[in-house]
Length: 315
Image (cartoon, rainbow, N blue to C red; front, side, top):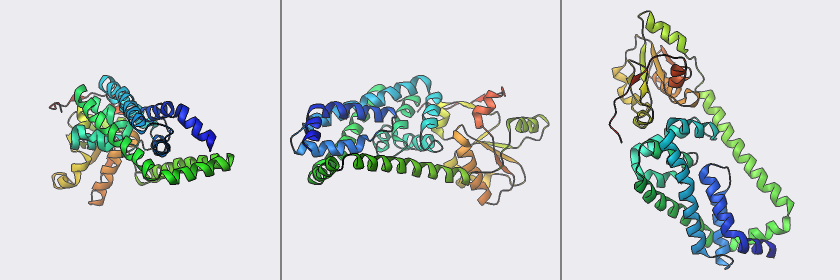
């Protein structure tokens, strides 16, 4: 126990800064639990609570700024990269788009506490054109609230944290194995959730060549772009003639859609997740001739097919 306290007193601030920064950049490290422990350490006067609080805010802002400016400079490409390395790649962009569209800058605060979205919100804000002063303002508030929440837990449960640290110091390698097992269990749980989601959207898809052939022979299906308004701001390309109906709007506009015509839905998200989800919505309402576009907008562009430009008002 004394060894743990010495390490915490000598290197605690550096560890908090590095781990929090790594978590904000996207590394799978336990920044929140570390802050809880740091709050407990502060109550036994091993480290300064105020110093830990300020260091955590700084690490949050720096980490978020990296992705904010990456999103501003590279837009959709950064979002796709983040979603490919995310444990929840099929929903992270859609959730962050929804947050940013609904709450604006304050969404950066909410995103801190939403697993799978916290890393994506900053580059999404940059891609949507949020100004730097606005980002810094909300980023500081978000970092302060996030840091205070977990440090506060450590302060409240400082006695219990000390008991846990004593037990861990006595258990040695057994404690390390237990922590590793918990981390593995968490990753497996998220993986199983993703597999169940992918199974739910498994259905027949139409290829780029088949869709283009239908258009060429004069039997074009109704093409629906199910991206959100935020998605249009990030990538203004669209398949010519497509009808823009976001996934969240689809149920309310069912009556506008023909039941005697093929319907093709597309997005630009991993695994065609939004398009497949939209196809399930239409199927539940009795539509029979509904298919997602395999590969979505990215595959359409990669195949060299023509695109139109969506005229949108900047957010």
